[in-house]
Figure 1: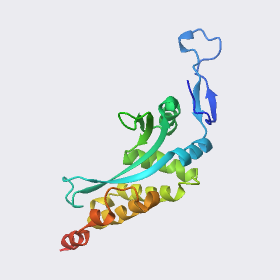
Figure 2 (figure 1 turned 120 degrees about the horizontal axis):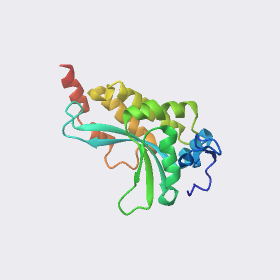
Figure 3 (figure 1 turned 180 degrees about the horizontal axis):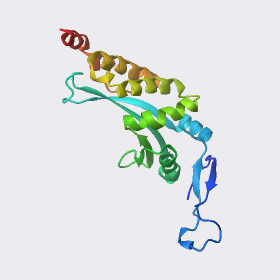
Amino acid sequence: MLLHPLCRVTSVGGDNATGADNQQETAIPRTRLEPAWVVGFVDGEGCFSVSVHNNPHVRRTRGWQLHPTFQVYQHDRYRTVLEDLVSFFGCGHVRSKGPRSSVLTYAVDSVHDIGKYILPFFEQHQLNIKGADFDLFAEIVRSMLRKEHLEPAGFERLARLAYAMNANGKQRARSIEEVLAGSSETVRQALF
């Protein structure tokens, strides 16, 4: 098992007492990540993001939808630490960043799982570097859980919050104006 060089963990054995008769359940050491280490690791290698996708089946918001994702990146030789994050948070999965990439991603993209597991952890254990992005992310996810994103005005508010994250959306393919083009007309039509 190859751990990340900076990984602070405690080793946890199995349930079987030493010398127990059933040796098939011999203790295999596992890793238990410490919350403070996870916060620091996510501050350096993680990302809270809300992508905006075009989806022609979403009529209320003119074919656009929001997709929040919590991700942590790491080289594939440290896959174990990403798998330990799956166990630590109790959700998410590890996948390749791309077909030719040696980078893996631990990702949680279920709005329900983010709201139930990720938000409470980072509200209890404050981030230093990514705290401002997390706060916006948390507001967006909670609003989505309340279904506010399904109405034009709510979608516009949340899209603007998403574009305020991660260096004010500088890496986005589309401008906020393109996404929201006509949103005022959409809101006005919804009112009448």
